[in-house]
Length: 606
Image (tube, rainbow, N blue to C red; front, side, top):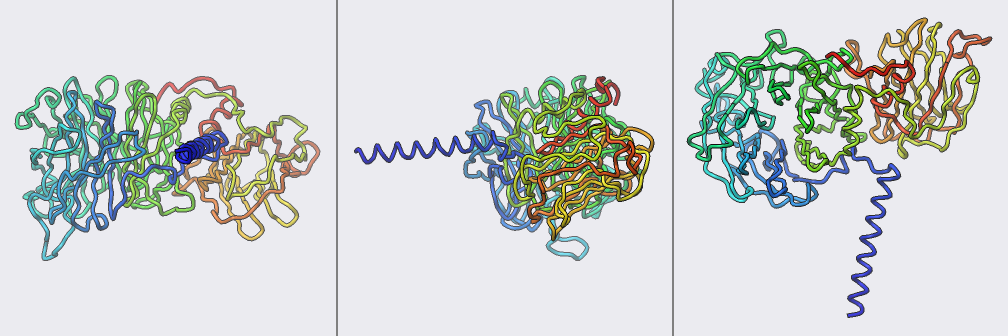
């Protein structure tokens, strides 16, 4: 008995130590919720997609997703549900909503009614199509019917299959089956509209496979009152024979998802292959939509996004989040890292903040995180996502989102991690001590934030540096075409990244914020309050740091002796210099800039 008690005490002590260790990691900054490896597993298989969650009335979570033994589109895809009783830490054994078979069931989207029933909407190859134009065994997971099932017992059992009445329209009649078979899928989650209604967006295709896409919407205004599934009233929007699209945006206009604004306006976001997403508004419940346009950040800069899921979410307090990838690619790649913008309502529109990194997979540029969902409960937030073989759940620090929404007003200097904070003529040819040797495989990274009057734009002039006589370290110098260039070297390997062209003001004050994020392995700039996203000249405005680079710091940082004015050779003057022993967020850099400029007004117009 004594031995048993000792074992119990030892186990308790071990658990306590582990908990203290985890808490210490969080407090010390070694834990990073953005690191994909810190996510909690939902499921892993040959294929898993769209892990979408609804919070049950019993506060348990029910997640539905598409899965299969093989890769996406290889057959046998089916949809399942799983339940978590501990806010995403663990999940029950999946329950099959549809059995795996020759006919795929895919792209499940859950909806919880006001009385607690769970509906799930999905694609089903009800026409049993497996060939086309003498081709056999074609991919068929987007062919056929839109269907639904429901559960009244928390996903333990599911009803029979019901087919939704999707109208045959012009885009269907031009497809490879002349409209006898429809090609469609959806990636959003149904939302509440009006007093009793529900609505979700989906894409129809006019050509197999993945061409001539346009947006459609399924609305049911009695789903929260009517319990007989045969009496649900379904309407397809927009009205008429053509879906939501801009004829100038090309053949790929797909993955429409929506939110309802505080005044009842519907807002839609979707993907294209222009290197940008598209947005549209409906002021009549989805019947008609504005001509889609490229969305902008509040700065007026167009938002970049490749052919990937552009997911939008609404949170409490009429605030919004936008999951995107901040690159102008036109294909399915480059989904690491994930960036996110915060949205607020201004004059009847949604205005988007400049982006922050939400999730990264360090050193894995080809990792493809996508098809997320957002859970908001008791003031806490979680994001689910998938790389197509593993679904994960991540709890997000609520301050992260609060600060993102606060970006519109922030005008104060960041103080956390501030090691050097110097102003005035004492900067001339000065050298400052750094607190610790920094190594890209360890630590957090750093930020250099400086204000300079630039009157001489000679490429290669050193602005500041931390390198030894052997060239080991890092430095910031003038680049070509009114830019700045950062380089880091461990004596063998080196990484360089240049800001966007044209961002340095000639004969004016320029504030340069360089963030080097060791954990995400990302180098980025905010210059004069604008995040550099590559503009029209480059797909990327942010660069990758070599994950295998060794130690680089000499524990000293110097202001370049030809970059300072006065009696020295150069004509440029560094007026202020800050060094942080961590990478600032984009929002913090914007706050520093606004503080330097004396800007305190919030965003007033989209």
